[in-house]
Length: 255
Image 1 (spheres, rainbow, N blue to C red):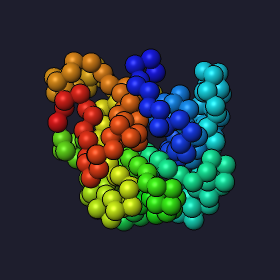
Image 2: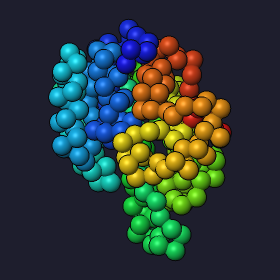
Image 3: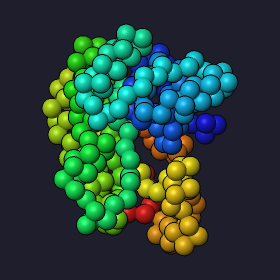
C-alpha cells in the first residue's frame, strides 16, 4: 500500500464491500482500512475473512467488521447489511465486488446453472444498492463502485454466463447513475483485466497464457489486486466528485 494516495474524506466513512475475504476484494478491504474508513464486508469464506482481519490488525489498522453471507440469498444479504449498518453506521460507500468466473462449456449450461451464475455475478449488485442508497441520500450523498470485467470486451470464451453478467454490469451502472445522481450518489464501474490473484495463478495462469497476456497488454507487467484497489479508492473518494455513469477499464491497456 506504499503507493496509495491518501484520501482524507474516506477517514471515518462507512464502507460496505461484498466478496471481501480474498482476492481483489480482500485488497480493497485492506486499502479502505488503511485510509481509516469504517469497513464492513460480506463473504462466504469465514476462514479467509478471519485471516484478513488478523492481517489488517497486524498492520496497525482498525479491523473491519465481517458478516458471513451467501449473496445468492437476497434476504440474507439484506439482513447482513442491516447488521453491518448497526456496527459501522449508515453506508456511504458500496463496492459491489463479489463474483466468480467459473469456466463452463456451452453444452454443459443448464437453465439452473445460468440463473445461478447471474445470481453470483450480477443480481446482488442491484439488491445491495437497493439496500443502501437511502443511507447515502439521507447523509448527503455517496459512491457506488460496481466491479465489471474486460472479459466481454475482449470476447473471451469459455464462460458465456459470466461474461453476459459482467456485460450487464455496465448497463446497470449507467442506469443507476441516472436514477441516483439527483441524490448526490455517484455510480461507476471498474473493469479489471487479468489480475494475478492467488486463485487466478493457481487455476489458470500458464507460461503460454502469460506470454499471450504480455503480447496483448500495453504494459508489459502482470497486474495485481492492489492495482484495482487503488482505482476503487479513487472512485469512492471525493477526488472523483465529478465522475459518475462511467465504466472504467483497468487492464494494463489490453482492450
